Image 1 (tube, rainbow, N blue to C red):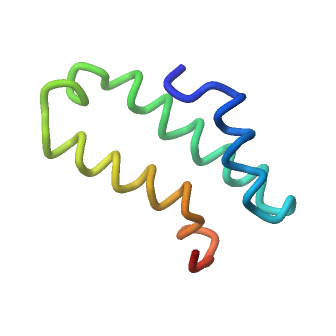
Image 2: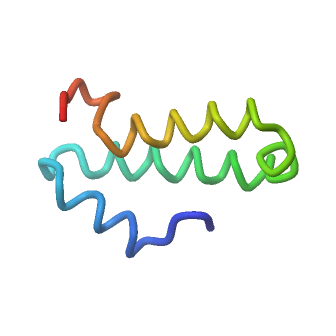
Length: 68
């Protein structure tokens, strides 16, 4: 797993508990997608850039309508 539960918990403490389940799900889905496409993530800069932008947006609550 790319992001362990300890790291996810560190991220979640910055958000309202009502969003924890959704955020955790989003992080795990993207992490799994990266694992399944690890060769593409390692060798394609465009793919890596897109995934990193998406992860950053999730961590910053963008998909929850939050402006941090």
